[in-house]
Amino acid sequence: MLGPHSLLPIRVAALRLFAAMAFAVFAGCAAAPPQPAAAVEEPQEESDADAPASEAQALAPEPVDRSALPNQELTENLLYEFLLAEIAVQRGNAALSAQAYVDLAKRTRDPRIARRATEVAALYARMNNAAIDAATVWHETEPGSTRALEALAGLLVAAGRYDEALPNLKKLLTGSANDPANGFTQLTRTLANAQDKQAALKLVRSLAADYPKLAEAHFAVARAAVNAGDERVALEEARKAGQLRPDWEAAVLLEAQLLQKASADQAASLLGGYLKKYPAARETRLAYARLLVAQKRFGEARAEFQKLMAGVPDSTDAAFAVALLSLQLKDYDAAEKYLRSLIESPYRDKDGVRLYLGQVAEERKNLPEALRWYGEVGEGEQYVQAQIRYGQVLARQGKLDEARVRLQQAAAKNSQQRVQLILAEAQLLRDANQPKTAFDLVGQALDRVPNNPELLYDYAMLAEKIERVDILEASLRKLIAIRPEHAHAYNALGYSLADRNQRLPEARELIEKALQLAPDDSFIIDSMGWVLYRMGNLKDSLGYLRRAFAGRPDPEIAAHLGEVLWAMGERAEAERVLGDATRESPDNETLVNTIKRLKR
Image (cartoon, rainbow, N blue to C red):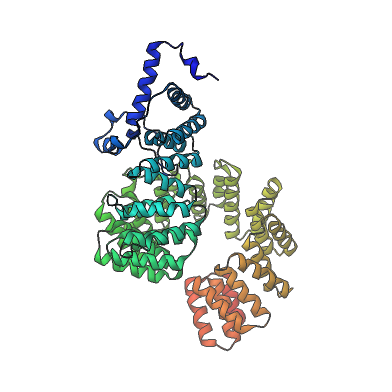
């Protein structure tokens, strides 16, 4: 390595140039204030002269009391070490530069060098501990500098050294030049990725304790509590923030998000009440509309999306939502109107629009138009689904062979898409009362991909249709071995045994496992009710079946519920349940057979 005296042969002009560089840094390093590693942005290529006025102001040097600066003589050794550090960073060796600058800052105790050391260590080298050492020197040598304090506090937070950061953060929040509300907002962002969530929550609570009337302080605690998994505290603090700033959308949205986990109705009521006071709050209205969709309150949800459209008439996302909700509400005129407007707009997913226009045509029983829309879907994300719908329409027209050929010739991009097309073809055969042909089709596909979960499950269900219980059980057990988290594999095997009144303890064990994996699945809840009925536990069975039917009024669940009610002597309710289900699904085989058996 070159020593200090090896600089002597350098030409005078070069030495003057390097000296000028050094003086420039000593005089102007404040022009680019360093930031904590967790919050920095990449350095800008453009010069300050080219930057917008607001950006130039942000980069402007902090006022410095020159009289307080040390009288730093630019000695040969100091110049050499400065050049070593600066050339190292220019050549991409940020670690060497950072260490050199930090050593220089500690020795000189010059805030200008400490600032540059902090910048290089944090921004370029990402050496957090070195940056903290430099920022400490900077703060100690320039105690009146807000930026030095910000840098030190931010770096300590980023390093998870919260106890050390706390007094510095308190200084920042109480400083006359600072806005505590903005400080808490910045702190929330900084702590979003904190490793120790509980320690981060403790830090924020300590800081917020001094600001009981500041909404942003309570909101910061709420966000930290969410990250730490303490939803009770999060909800309390979000409510306090909202009470202190009743018009603040962020607070009401966070409160609604937390409420929704316990009660979607309460969350909806909160958002609806807020919108009555502040009807221009678009983010809240969007959240309210989505919540109404989740509650299946489709008419109200559509009205909210239409209000969003009134504020921004060209909002294609809102128009698409209104179209789908209109389709759900069977308002096909409105659905078509909005979907056709999207075809003429710059909406990004035109093929998705064509797919739904095909469904509108199907619902209106205009099958030729449905085929036209499905046929116009290109080979993108919606292509396979469009081909499946095309095949289904052909089958409805009595053209089963043509439908099968369509699915077989569809251009699948990968094996998973080919499996989707095979399963769709098998469903057409099942619907055409050709379960054996469907069974053979899926079996041939399994010969090519023997461990495909979707094919194994469908093969098992088709095996049941043709009374091949041995294949059903073997396929489902293989599926469970491949996918031990496949709730419906356990459920199908358990239900099959229960329905045949065989190995009932084993059947119950399988269904219990399925229920552990998917506790809210109505079909699995129905299976539990059915196996309990088979085991003679009518009271518990009825509870499960009522719950399953409330979650999903499916005709087969209705058949089970009606049968258990009938067995318990509740004939009037049983007839009502079965009668309502028959009017909705008059051709359901399980329902028809159940009613015949009960009334014999």
